[in-house]
Image 1 (cartoon, helix red, strand yellow):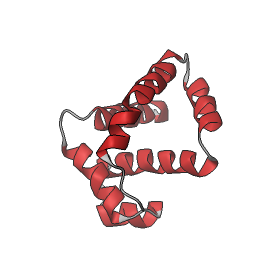
Image 2: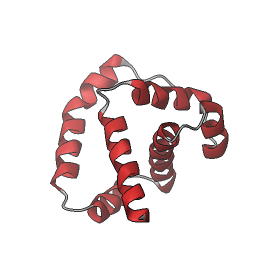
Image 3: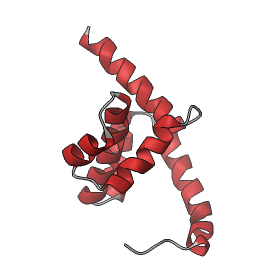
Image 4: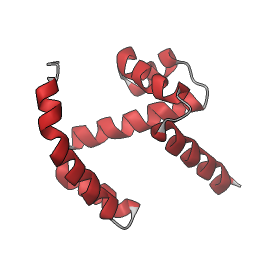
Length: 108
């Protein structure tokens, strides 16, 4: 896979900010799902979903190797997710923890 250059990252920042604002303006999870389905390929949506699942699986206590095997992802991607799980200030991990807690409440 080709490495993204710093110039590409810097050039994309305004567009990314606009994309984030558009997503933030949506009113429901169903609208976000539809938006992503229109913006991304099915494979990209699956990749997003797998990345979300890997963070939740790590928070549930699965090993990185088990998550890689179960999700069919490289250990490098799992390691990236694990770094955010260990970061107490991570927004990603905080949202995943909240989702797991909500799932527990729904099971009761």
